[in-house]
Image 1 (cartoon, rainbow, N blue to C red):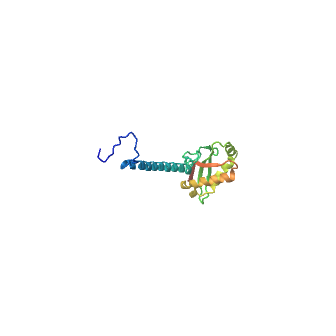
Image 2: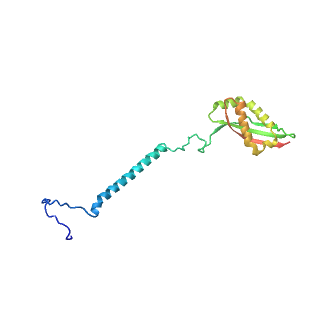
Image 3: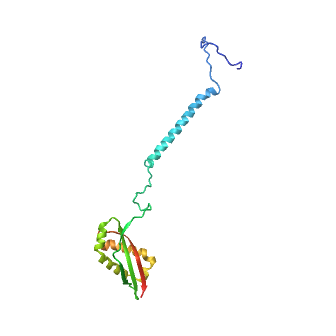
Length: 183
């Protein structure tokens, strides 16, 4: 202790001198410092809470906005189709000056659980065979090349869905055999 420090030996009785001891140094700054630290922590907690609530509201309650339905074709699961193979092999000639022989074995794919489509395709099997014969006999050999098969498939699907079938919908057409041979 230094000489400048006062020592209060009274039992709390002050004799009316009215002298109060003022805190100095770090003791005087500590309450103000703790007050600012508490205000800063409260502000950080408030900002984090408001930001979290805002993000949840904007993103729709935590559900991802890019959720795809389970039956979406973009998920990677390819749909399963039923195959109609009753048409069988059809032989015809092309529409060239020197005709080429065409041998086609076509498969029609439709929705798997569509029993009405199966019935309609079965009922129209003779029309389908005639369609295949007429379709390929109206083409030239250069139109029947392998690089043109996607376009041929699309034309066949459109023709079947719009002109031949009533309620059934063809989803894909595949060729078990598509041979074009010069006579």
